[in-house]
Length: 80
Image (cartoon, rainbow, N blue to C red; front, side, top):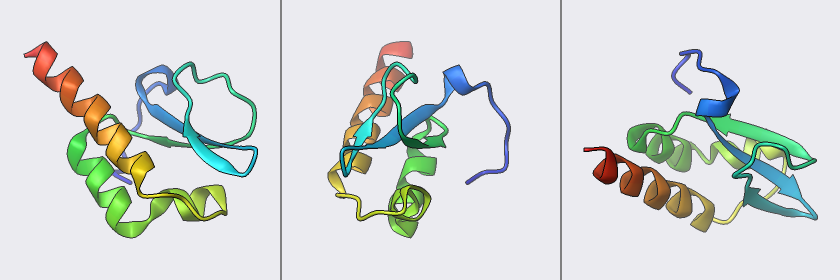
C-alpha cells in the first residue's frame, strides 16, 4: 500500500485458510497470503479500501483489520 520495501519477516501476513482470512503470525501457513506493513495508518488505509478482500479474492471480515490494529498498537506502546 505504501510502495516501501521491507523484509517479509517484518511484515504482517494474512492468509486465506479453509475459506477464512486469518492472521499468520509465523509467516509459514499454507495458502494465499497478503502482506502489510505493521503501521496503524497503513492498516487503517487497507481497511478503508478493503485491501485483503481483493488480495485474497474472498470476503474478509472487518475484524481481521481490528485484530491487526490492536496488535500493532500494543507493540507500539510497549516499544515506547
